[in-house]
Image (tube, rainbow over all chains, first blue to last red; front, side, top):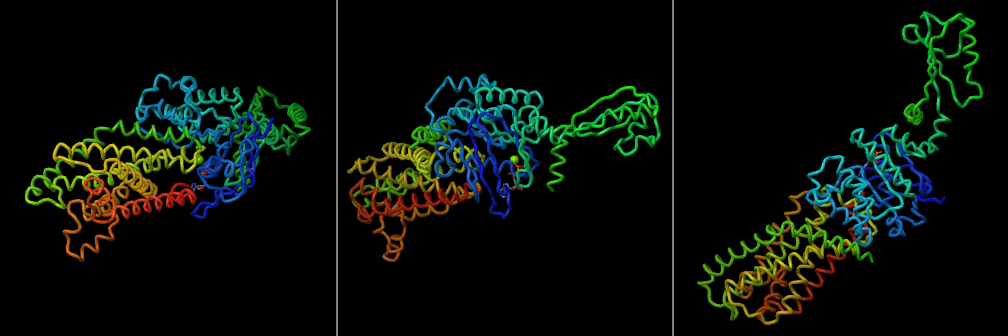
Length: 308
Length: 253
Ligand SMILES: Nc1ncnc2c1ncn2[C@@H]1O[C@H](COP(=O)(O)OP(=O)(O)O)[C@@H](O)[C@H]1O
Ligand SMILES: [Mg+2]
């Protein structure tokens, strides 16, 4: 595996004086999918725009496939496909023309077979001769993806590709992304939806206020930060915790019908065995037990809260 | 050079033109015909020959210039303003292209369109007045250079403009008056001496004068000076565009 994208101390201060990126560094391996998660205004779009040449960086450097994006911009940009956050398309243009145009703009010779494949893959082939203004929002977004894929990029940036897209289309988009990964395309996507990162990313980066707080393997992140909760349903309700169950951080829920126990999956002792023993000693009868893994969402909320 | 990109932009822009072919062609033809009816027939019948040419024929070069200047500017400015306005410029900025390729594509397409319109007006003129063009190749060369340089100016205006109103302002408030006052419909020698001097500061005069020379062999200023003026103007426009892209002015954050 080689490094596909390398961002070093990248910073960006807008003309307004707003510091949108504060010395961001990031390495991305060829063929991986990384999700950048962050609240509105975190700097996700600015990061992507700067890498792609739309925004001028204030400091730092970026290489794509080993090519510097400023001094060696042609080979760098040939590798990049960009699907911007805003849906910007020429309203009166035909779908197939605007997609073919993108291919030409990136210096690739005409290849009708590739364009057809791309449009079919995105379920746009039937609409190839439609004017863009006739398409639905979801279709327009797929046209943007088709444009980005028209020149066979090796690295694809998807800036909030599923924002405002219904659940079914979102699933379709995830399939497209997995298909691209199978072809070895490196993918960087930004999203608000945590389940999206959870569903398709290999690694997750968390960005807030122009800084990357952490980048980790999704599973490692879950493990490191992941807490589990165990809900214990009781045969008969209790009004207070017996002395013996003291300081285990147990919480009474559902009017005393259940107890909530939170533990760290990474700890050497989870305390489950002793807890169950203590419950039994206290004469409390259990009806059922459920455990629940914390989602990325909980991790995210926690991190951003700490980072604030 | 990314020839493919240049070609793609050029073709894309030309297709846009063909989509609105009727608007692009019909309105200049109609307005030119009106000028002929009003100036050529109504007024021209009361004016003797100007510098040995009938008045109807005399105004042909000026009329072509009037339309070609306005068309070059509006085509080129719209061509680059529109992507900026609807946001599709992101694609140009992220593509492996340099300024030269972008400008060649957009300005080339705009200049081609206004050149074609210039020829159509010339054809329309033949319906109204007999014309005997003395230096046809120079005339075409002059026309082409004018289309090119004013399309470059249009490109700059398109990048500068922040609204559709601003896009219209320069052709309307600057170019049209300069053309009217630059000897389109009269010979500068017909003016009182003071106004003759003032007119010498109007850059459009040099264009129209040179263009008319190619038609009839008569000019208000030496033809070499006309050529020099338009060459200098082209160079200035290219310089400004180079500076715009270097600094990212009005196109990049
Ligand atoms: N063109 C701009 N000029 C000034 N500030 C900007 C500009 N674009 C974005 N910003 C600011 O930079 C910050 C990051 O924005 P952005 O990168 O769009 O965040 P995200 O994509 O994570 O929502 C925000 O505070 C935003 O207001
Ligand atoms: Mg954004």
